[in-house]
Structure formats: C-alpha cells, structure tokens
Amino acid sequence: MIDEKGIKIGDYVLVTRWSYADPNDPWYVGFLKEMGEDCTGNFYRVDDGLINRRYWRHCMVITKQDAEEIFEDMESWVHKK
Image 1 (tube, rainbow, N blue to C red):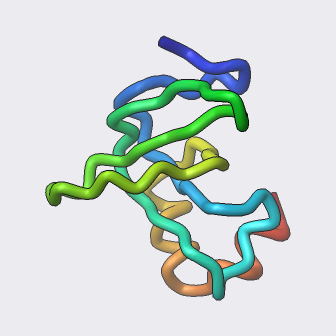
Image 2 (image 1 turned 90 degrees about the horizontal axis):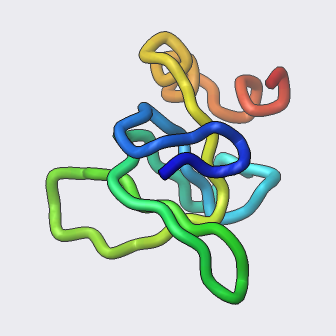
C-alpha cells in the first residue's frame, strides 16, 4: 500500500499528531509499520519495538540525517521543510 504522498510501509518516517508538528506536541521517528484510512482521514503507525498501538495522523518520509537534525532541533527542521 502506498498513500497519496508516496509513503509506503517500511519507510523511515517522522509522525506527528498535528500537521504543524510543534516540537512540544507528540511526535515519533521510526519505520512505518501500518497505515490506513478511516472516517477522519489517514492514520499511520510506526514500529517502535514495543506493543504501541498509537496511531498518528501526519507522516513524512525522512532520512537518517534528517532524524539526527530533528533530535538536535525539531522546530527549526520542521519549518525549513
């Protein structure tokens, strides 16, 4: 399955609860494990090695270098994309 943004299972992604990706709001970086659509829109779940059933609403494919930059300063990184 590939969504309309070209995201597919196995991609390394940044997922956030809200589209503006405020660094103080919930977010996660990992490999995409599941995605789908329900009455409220798309949802995504990452493989965190735990039994985490959290679904995220916003997702973007990133690189390992992007992830390192995100961990250093998420707010600056998100706003430059």
